[in-house]
Image (cartoon, rainbow, N blue to C red; front, side, top):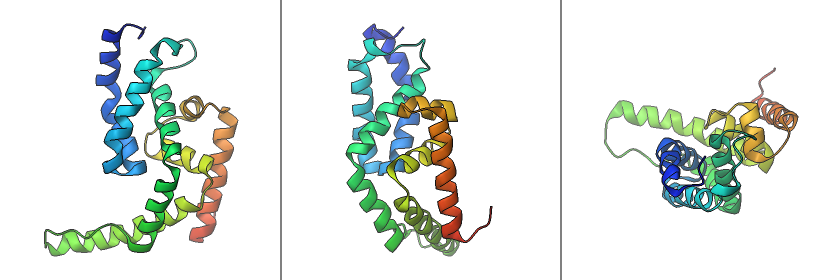
Amino acid sequence: MITAPDAFTAVFDAHYTEIHRYLGRRAGLDVAEDLAAETFLIAFRQRKLFDASVGEIRPWLYGIATNLLRRHRRAELRHYRALARTGPPPDDDGHDQRVVDRLTAGVTIARLAELLSRLSTGERDVVLLVAYAGLSYAEVAHALNVAEGTVASRLSRARTKMREALGVEA
């Protein structure tokens, strides 16, 4: 039970790094710290509403984090569109191989960012919760408060759209 403030410390310690990493991948590291802190502040304030009989705390935290990300949707879309145009910032360490690696990754990141920006919000949330957070369909459904079948259909539609954009056959 996490209703006691002291018990919430264990929740924070167990999940902060993972939630921060997810938020960093979705919104950028400059925003992740604030959003992660806000995620746990909301979770702490709503800890009495959490019902362990409904599901695990991890998807509940991802749900809070994803809802916060929705508030930052415009910035996220601008971020993906900028990556699609310019790619990641260049590496300044001067090593030839790192430059080649970065350029190769830049092309891949730019293409992926462009594809993600074309997905609907629901499809993008499902793809990134599965790919970045490694959540199962059931956990994504719990995090987004949708049916597991909805998760499967959104992921299927997103995969189809991405394959078509890449010219890859199923």
